[in-house]
Amino acid sequence: MIIAIDGPAASGKGTLGQRLATHYGLRHLDTGLIYRAVARTMLDSGHALDDVAHAVAAAKSLDPARFNDALKDQRTGEAASIISAIPEVRAALLAFQRDFAATPPGAVLDGRDIGTVIAPQAEVKIFVTAAPQERARRRAAELRARGEPVDDAALLADIIKRDQRDSTRAIAPLRPAPDAHLLDTTTLDIDAAVKAAIALVERTRRR
Ligand code: C5P
Image 1: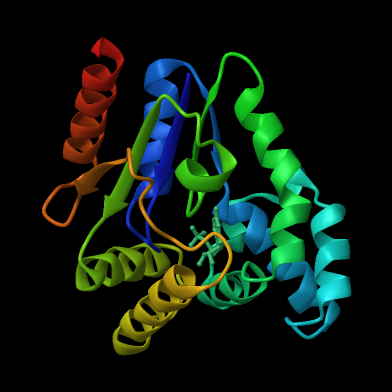
Image 2: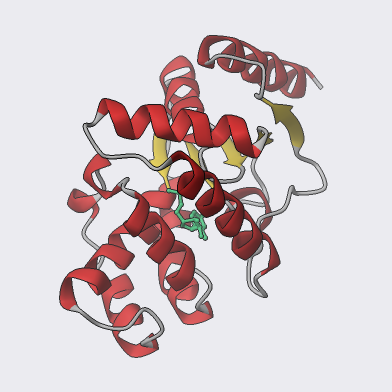
């Protein structure tokens, strides 16, 4: 089984994906980490984020060992949003994600274009949303827990800017697949969101 979870920044899709994967015994891929890893390589090497040749080279030499929570800072997220709008970068990352999805026993992938581009054949597609203020509040709590300084107003502005960039770009924009189930988690904690997502999966599988 493949479960595709898409949604905007800090909507909770990563945690949801992880929990669903554990529940169903599937593998999990947070595809945001892939774009963040490429972005971090560009930042560390000092190349401009619109340097297509270097961004593609970074995408092609992707090291999954680098996909970890150290990439979850604001600066890397913002840079990831910029390099992810480059069609050649997305093309270079396609096979890795599709291979991951196709490997038995199946997988939960979360990102922006899983249900629309990476795995349109996924049995279950969930589009997770939450109000921008709530997403900013969650991201602020996460950053504070890691000891990072937080500017609440800047964080909300960053989330709104990233939503705008991700949903209006020409290639693989953030949008629900026509057959995706919408899950608004604004008033749900993570346990309630997981319960609602499992109910969606079960309902879809029964059909
Ligand atoms: O989900 P996360 O915030 O970690 O993603 C970082 C950035 O990577 C997003 O803002 C988005 O621009 C990009 N991304 C993407 N496609 C995906 C996953 C992430 O374009 N499947």
